[in-house]
Image 1 (cartoon, rainbow, N blue to C red):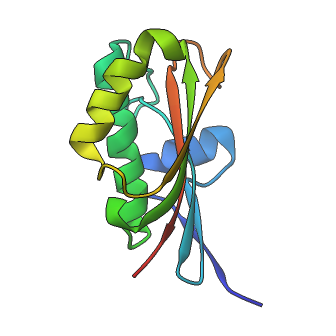
Image 2: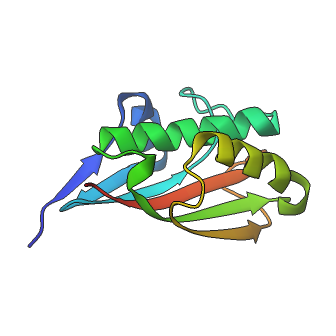
Length: 130
C-alpha cells in the first residue's frame, strides 16, 4: 500500500482543528489539495474580491510548497465561484498574474455558496511532484 502523508502548513493548523480536514494529502509523488479560499491565518474571510482571490492563490501556494510542489507541478485544477459572472474578470486577472497561464487542465464551476458567508472562490487542485 502506498504511504499517505498529511500536508499541513504551519499557518493552517487552526483550520485543521476547526474543520477537521487536512489541506492536502500526498500519495507517492501526487499531492491532492483541498480547496483553498481567501481568508487570513486567523480564519477571517477577506472582503475585497481581488484581495480574497490573491489570498486564495497564496494559501494554495503555501500548501503546494509544504508538499514539495509548486504551481508548475499542478496538473488539474477546479475552481468554484460564487457570483461567477460578477467576479470572473477580476479572478482571471489575478490568476494570470500569479499562476502559470495555460499550464494545466482547469474547470470552473459556479455555485450558490461556499462554506462561509462572503467566500467568493475555492481553488482545488492535484499536483505531481517532478
